[in-house]
Length: 172
Length: 204
Image 1 (cartoon, rainbow over the protein chains, first blue to last red):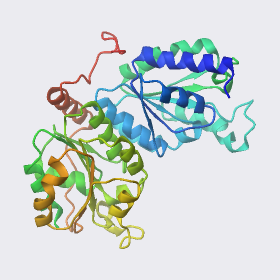
Image 2: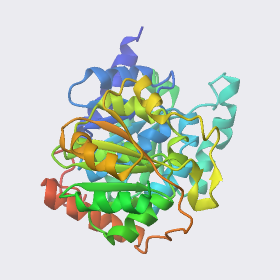
Image 3: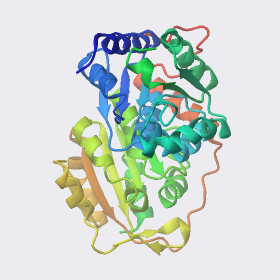
Image 4: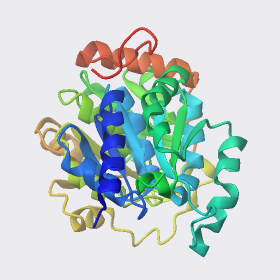
């Protein structure tokens, strides 16, 4: 059951997607983004495609670029780490823009031991392959999503927006 | 069936549609068959992603036939893609699995469980209704219209012999490929792909 704060935060993120012109969302859940996936699924401004693994979202969204459909690959931190091969081979080689949402797992405040590696390595991993990311740890940063999307398109490269749990819960 | 003969037939029937090939002999053989750089995207070194890639195109350009030729070495890395394909059920997406049971481009080493893998059964098991198995040119000729010309997503296993001689690479720069392929789709499907983000609003 979502709190009012979480509903409000989810709705704000969804509106930024609309402002960005996103029409297709390919997703694989992490429990932090499950409410966002549900909101996208119920919103007929988007075509939502649940995928079998995160790499499939990379493939689908990269193809959607050639279909003229602005898209988003929505996944958790662990899923993103599995996509490095696809991102570097498809999006870096061919200069195909790709917009990704992920979660800031394993940091202070996330007590799940199986996410510790994400806390230790996710942002460093992205830095190591020069993959730009926008960290959303405060509510006001949500409004920068359309600018991040535009930057992604301008660069013809992938860009990631990474959300803290507090922002997704509407508590920051 | 010989992949080269098979691709010659497909190339002769391609029309305005686009082709996506996976890394290895499918890309090399399509290139050697057609020398095309506009109606095809050679998606090298991203094994198993091409049917999802093709699905993205097929969604945005629903009147454009999209054929994907995926090697079975690529397929076995992500057979779950078929679940997404079935969910989408895109009528203009035709998925061809080039089954030679080996990793042909990297020394013809056999695939895991090579002889027992029943790719058509996997497709049927996820609910794909139009599944075909072709192991001869005659079969391809007789089934082609049913597979390709009739609307509806299809999954077709093309059983071919491994190539003894590698077809070689595709001599096109990746970024040039992006623009040539994209411009072809823009023209044929009447959609806008390339935008200047500073000059054109994105939310249209």
